[in-house]
Length: 129
Image (cartoon, rainbow, N blue to C red; front, side, top):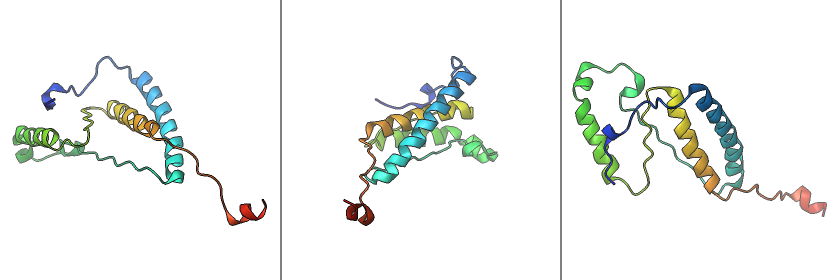
């Protein structure tokens, strides 16, 4: 499937901000729990890279704005040729609409791991057996 960035809307009008914020908060709490387990197990890792196309919300200069379509072309080329791992494109004009799909993806990824608390084995514990 060819990725075309113009196919992605940057605002979902069907989402209710309060409902999405509540769902996001619940997911973030669960992510927090799972990340402690992942760290303790020391078996898996997760790399998350964020790349803002519009200077990440900072005021870009006019040269950058004039070349915006060229930047889109470069991004699309990267997405379509560097696809050994899946891309999760999150176009969003607001932080609350950005955080929800990111949290959803991270939570789904963490839940796909076989996360377990490691056994507690220490010298002190062994001596008491």
